[in-house]
Amino acid sequence: MKRSAAVLWMCLALVLVGCTTEQVGQAEPEMGPAPVSTDPVVIEMSAVDAAPRTKGAGGEEAQFIDVRSATEFGAGHAEGAENIPLDEFEDSLNRIDKNKQIYLICQSGRRSMEAGKILTANGYRRVFSIEGGTPAWEAAGLPMGGK
Picture 1: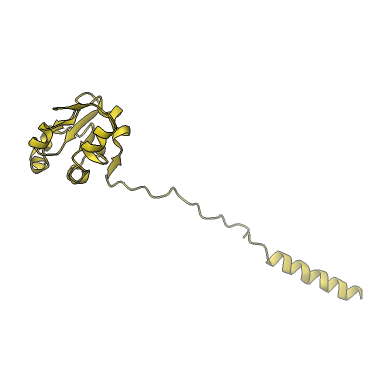
Picture 2: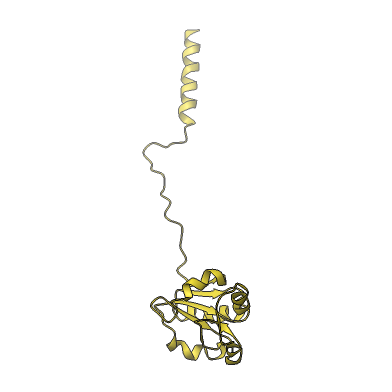
């Protein structure tokens, strides 16, 4: 009986030792930081969120560009924006400072996103498109020029 009990205890000990998940002497592989995309992207931003950031347009930190036609721009535009129409955009990159945050606006957001893609393809890193364009800017009660 003592012998049976001793064998039973030995078997139980072997089972318990064999069931541990930790392997002695082997370190777990380290998980590095999650991969970060280095590809530049155009970030969409609401007019209300963009407005305080564009107040410095033409200054040290930001450049605010309306990519609509000269006629559309003349009919009314977000205050502080300069006009570089989308159809002249690629030829006007020398007017846009790569060291500044670039805020783009148009009528709906489509042309500003297109202009933003041109910028990011040409090495600009801090590019923002104002969602809803000039109508969203005006609807938010933000200052307008040219009217």
